[in-house]
Image (cartoon, rainbow, N blue to C red; front, side, top):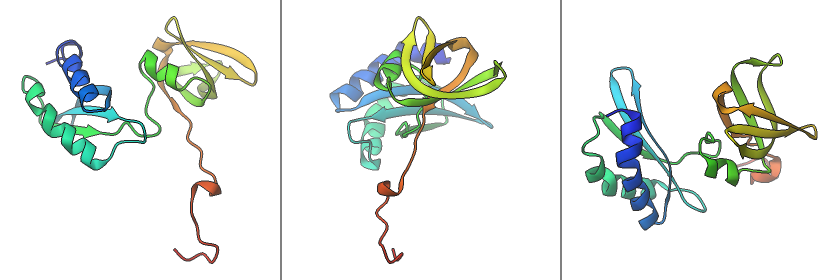
Length: 162
């Protein structure tokens, strides 16, 4: 089953199951890695996904993906730095810092960071140093949130012992 058929026939049922189970279906992909085909399903929920969530959804979705030709089924969290692919992803991360990677250099740069304004007419719009710039989706290989950590994010004892 090709990715386009997977998206049309299986993804809507997986999204309905996810919503019924209290999750959001973030993405579904069928990828070849070496000699194996992986069917990867990414789910999320407010507060994040646990291993138990992935296991529960894995068991529930197996009958829905029987028609898909895959070797391994993985259900996982999209992660903090998940790629932004759909309109809802761009809407969710508007106002946040993102990095954009290009297939080939644009204005001498292979990547750029800025504050995401949004996805407008298939163009990723960033605010870079107070100036809006738009990039056609077909020129972008990856757009994902920038994750930064500070010392306040870690609970490190003052004496240095863990």
